[in-house]
Image (cartoon, rainbow, N blue to C red; front, side, top):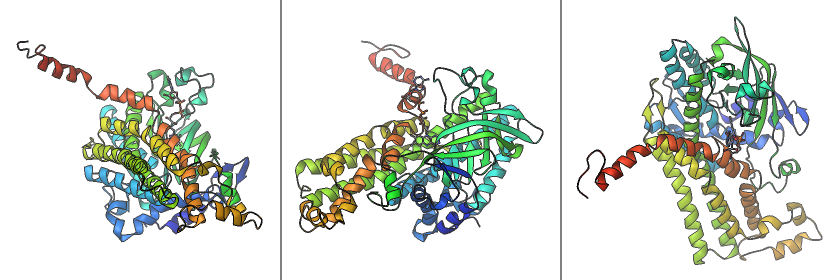
Length: 486
Ligand SMILES: Cc1cc2nc3c(=O)[nH]c(=O)nc-3n(C[C@H](O)[C@H](O)[C@H](O)COP(=O)(O)OP(=O)(O)OC[C@H]3O[C@@H](n4cnc5c(N)ncnc54)[C@H](O)[C@@H]3O)c2cc1C
């Protein structure tokens, strides 16, 4: 079975006996937990879309490793067309779920580890790449969800891993055995961790030789002994428990803190172990892919938000006003600019030594830097169009109350041909995406996910080759290498 259906995916998770903590309690049946289930539904869409004939070319691909048709989320990009298809697929899924569907972090990690292990073996004569390809076969054959686990807690940001007051603030190898290694530490902000079968661990930053114990990349099953998963809170998440006013009727995201309390990893699942120079390369490659991803998924969610703002304008009778039309067009412009960046860095992708294609890193960083800003402006414009009821609307339960429900129905109606319920549901959706749990994925993840804005600026400074631009200017100004007369 190389392609699971959505139902098979949900069923498969029931046998992953991971330890999950939610709101201070360990939950056995995390699959049906009301705080988790919307995110599981969103992740399941990555399976559902792969079953639809109309999306076969977008959502699946012929594996370069096994020759089988696999879900694109487990595929190694074989050409720029694969990179472009990825961005389009992520946009489609953002449109369908209106939230983070969690599976691209793993795809980005798989692609990054593939090329880096190849180059590591070539440079140092190690044997990681064949191991990794074997692991990838396992993932592709079972159509697994892989959590890409990069971010360490990091403690005092001024200090290197080995200088921290507590050496475990960055994940590290604590023991080397004949059959494998033991790792200890934590990974924070892990998108969709509860919905994953596998955790693919990578270092969080470039490392110096003194910190070789922190240069670790490896894969562990999500239910490995010693692994604990603590789900983070999101704004208004208790509405999912109440069953009302959620905004997004079916979908949501989640992040978790993963704790690895001396987890054993057999050598066949270890892909980096002490080679500090390649730790930095792995971080850079993963970040590049993930910065590309946001040019797809956030654009899809942006499409939903633009649609919701337009719908509200129509429900409230403002849609023909010139400033409202301008604002909708501005939202479209910003959103499509992000898509253009995602497509551009993909179309300009090039082959790495392993044969796996990598995005144009400069353009991927431009993409992500725009993503740190434009969704906030799109959200601001949507809130402008929505009006204040966005944050003052009574509960669905008040609408059902015999004493006040009728009044609310009467007084909160906009244009007569639309129902009050229609208007209120749309307001809740905009609330969800711009202030509620959806804003975690659409806004804060846009800011910090795949690295905070400064990380992209540092990469732009490194990749922009500003010296060559100076030489261009000097040449035209008439001095420098090919100087002419003034
Ligand atoms: C919703 C969401 C989902 C995410 N999903 C994942 C995931 O699935 N997997 C994963 O591995 N990670 C994930 N991340 C983590 C993401 O990559 C990090 O949030 C990001 O790298 C920033 O790290 P941080 O949160 O520790 O913030 P910090 O690194 O503390 O950054 C906070 C601020 O401090 C600045 N700063 C940090 N260090 C320094 C320094 N040394 N000198 C000067 N300034 C500094 C930063 O530029 C930033 O402005 C996710 C994050 C979010 C918000």
